[in-house]
Image 1 (cartoon, rainbow, N blue to C red):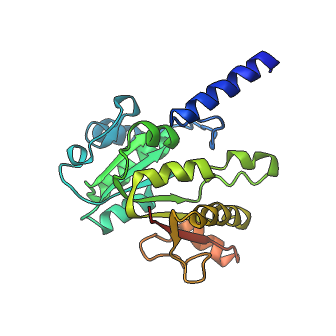
Image 2 (cartoon, rainbow, N blue to C red):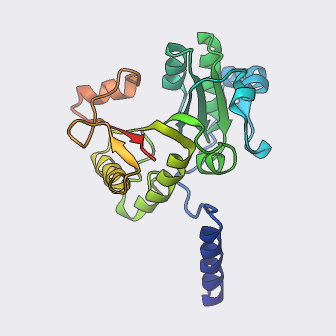
Length: 248
C-alpha cells in the first residue's frame, strides 16, 4: 500500500468513527460455497419467500417480520442449523433469526425447519456484521448467540476472530437492557480471548457476567448438545460457554 493510500484509508476510518459508523476491515470467515443437495435447493425454493430475509432490504421491523411482538434471539453462524431449529421449536413463544454465509447451511436449516414444523424462525444469508449494522434496530433483541465460531487458531489470524471489542459493542447496542450475549467455543485459547474481551467491557459497567465464578458457565439447558460436541466430550475435549447480560 502506498503512503497516500494508507493515509486516505486512515482518514476514512477516522471520519467513520466520528460519525458513529462501523467499518468492517477484516472478515471473520472464508466463504466456501459447496454444492447444494437437491433437498437443500428445494427447501430454499419453497421456504425462502416466507422465511428468508434480505440484507439489501435494510432495516427490519420485528413485529412485521414475525407478525407478533415477542422476544427475539439472533444466532450468528448457525452452520447447518440443527441447533437453531431445535431451540426455535423448544421455545415457540420466542422469535429466532439465524445469520449464515454458507448457502448449503441455509438450505439445510430451512429443510430442517420444514421437517420440524418450525415457523418462528427467519434467516439471512449474509455477513452478520453487515446485518447488525444495517438491519437490526437498536435495543431490539432479547439475546444474541454465537456458537463455535471459526477460532482462527493461528496467532497471525487472531485479528479475524469475530469476537472483538468493536463488534461486542455493536452487539450490546442491539440488545435490550437485560438482554444476554451467549458465546460458546471448543477452543480454549479462543475462550480465554472471549473472556478477556467481555471482562474488559464489563469493567466499564456495560455487562454483567452471569457466571457465579466470574468466568464460564455450565452449558445452559437451552443450548442443544451437538453430535460434534458429544464426540469431543468422549475424546476429552472441552467446551466453554459464556453468558453476559447487558446492564446499560
